[in-house]
Image 1: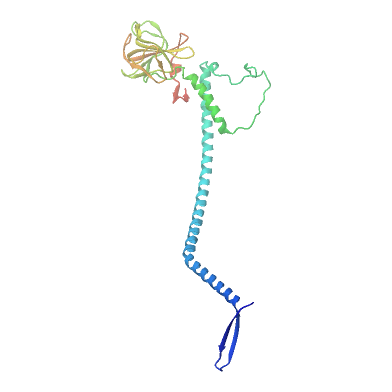
Image 2: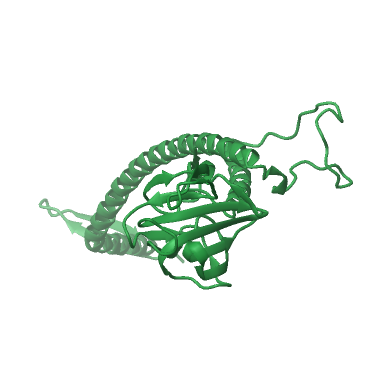
Length: 302
């Protein structure tokens, strides 16, 4: 049964008017009013939070824009660095190729090319010679940067050979007497000079001109205090008239290592270094070898 709420309204003319309102409608209106009241309270308390969230969102959007800008700048820099790297690498490869040719020519001129590993072999392991087969070229494309290591390996192979060949000056100074025929400084008679004489100040460091092993260190006849070093490929060097010896027989030495100090011992007219280069016991003109200069183990000039 439907229930009503009856309102009786009395007018100024002393007339009555009755209004009937269903109770269910009143309940619905009450619930809706309560709901609106709750929503109003929630909105009242959440306005500051909403404002804070909005401010955070704006700050994040600004930060994202800044990061995107920085990312674009970094991408531009990375692209420029990659280009610069490629240019530097291309230049380095070109320079290394040029040096490789100089080193290869030097090794070839010294007759040492046969000591390098064979680069081309057939499938049975035997060497291939030009003209034996028709010329052919091909293979996959390999960028320049990927070939760089192969080029370094090739240069290292050449330098590995040269490290055991006496190259460069054993000490600073000028040549007072060259290799070959000369007049003996003591007798005045014609004689054969087995090395060259380098004049410098007493006590000047004398260095090994190649990697090797000391086979003799001590006094020897007219050489005075002398050091003899055996290198690779039949080479040996002799350093005579030393003031002091700093190595011993059997000791391994490296190119540039001090083996003694320049002096005036033995059959000598003044402070100088008598320097000899031999190969398989045969005297060679040291001047051919001291004209060659190696810088930091990689640059070769003549």
